[in-house]
Amino acid sequence: MRKILEDALESCRKYAEEGRVANYIPELAKSDPAEFGIAVISDACHLECVGDYDKPFTMQSVVKPMILLMALIDKGADRVRSLVGVEATGKPFDAFNYSDQALKREHINPMINTGAIALCTLINGDTYEEKFARLLDLTRKMAGDEALSVDEDVYLSEKMTGNKNRALAYMLKAYGMIEDDAESVLDVYFRACSIKINCIGLAKIAYILANRGKDSRTGEQVIPPEYARYVNAIMTTSGMYDGSGEFALNVGVPAKSGVGGGIMAVVPNRMGIGIYSPALDKKGNSLPGIKALEILSEKLEMSIF
Ligand code: GLN
Image 1: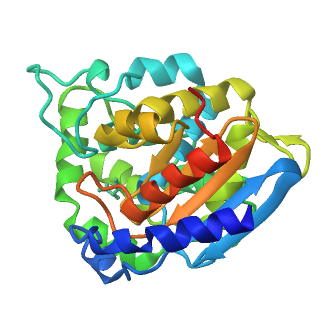
Image 2: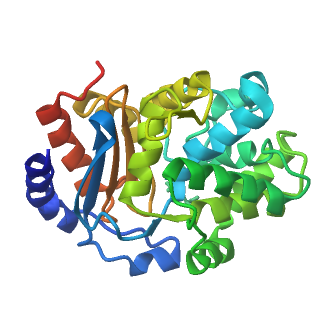
């Protein structure tokens, strides 16, 4: 395994030159495109890591599966589905060009910004601070890292400049899909996107999702199996946004990317993978990360299809 990871890392480094770090969140423009790390947890919880596997980066959209899980745990699948649909949009993660006059649940899913922002309202808690604290606790637990915290600079950077997300939140409000104060809802979303993690943390979350919600290290059923299935299914169709079909063909596992450069990949019953490289393709997915996953998929026969 180690040799396979080292080879994948070395042969995909060159793609960093073709990618670009996200700059629409000013703080993310400071990322180093040359950083590249992989962590894989496989059989009997064996962890193998290469490159910058312990460098922290912000989760960004990799937190969307966590928001979905928290909403499912707190409100159940029927309520979640009544607010946010499950179909792939085939559009960018921050798209707002819905074709109908009104915004409806059918237009969104939990892996795009509008869907994730809406789901923040379903997390239990009397205040939005409490809602975020619950989400952070679940993320810490699944990542096996009680020290996970928010990168305040990235959080403030997005809060100051995130007017497109603000527009999406107000659109949800305009069409009666959220009732709460849009700024408070956005605050949870921006904080969630700014949680700092590393490749090992992502691999641990993925390993739990790969094992139907059970933490094989402790034997604890951390999340109900049906919710792990829900999240994995949606990641398969929509986790890489409008690159999900291509990714299904070339890699073939449930996965979620983020503009911080992280990708979390779930190989059902077998592996949890965390990758980090902030050089993104045009769709906002880590380019070296996708290329490395293509190699791993072939060498380790990962595709579920
Ligand atoms: N915080 C980012 C945003 O809302 C997350 C997007 C992403 O990672 N694709 O724009």
